[in-house]
Amino acid sequence: MPNPEEKITDAELEVMEALWAAAGPLTLAQIKSALAEKNGDTTKTLLRRLCQKGAVAQEKQEVYYYRPLVVREELGQFRTRRLIEKLYAGSAKAMVAALVAHDQLRPQEVEELRRMERRTLPAGTDYGAVQGLRLEAREKLNAVRPENLGQAARISGVSPADVAALMIWLER
Image (tube, rainbow, N blue to C red; front, side, top):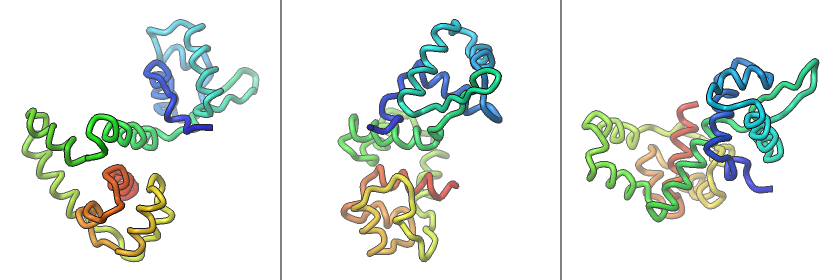
């Protein structure tokens, strides 16, 4: 079965947002109240689809309770990777250049990107355990042992999506 992240629609994403915002599992009524613009049948249909896709779990107690199986950060990472691949031929650098060219980045954000590039990678990291990295990237990173994200980004075989996965991993 493909990744559940691959098939989550924008309407389903609204349901996922309600589930992620909750402290625990929610009932249909609780989800409906969080989604003021959706009627009950629409919400029920979206939940059924999310369950079929493996993105949401349904548990029967006195009523059905729903909880997310997909982590928000993983969905964000997946969608970012897809955006970079589809619109920028796999080049995060091209995406950032487009943002800069169209004045979408403030000077503070450019400086933050520079700081991120210099961000140190922990010595002795087992890149095989980092979620979201492709096999080739794991092998190259374990062989080269870069000191920071900038060095990792310059390794042949490490894609911009892999660097994004490293950045997310460092934030955890």
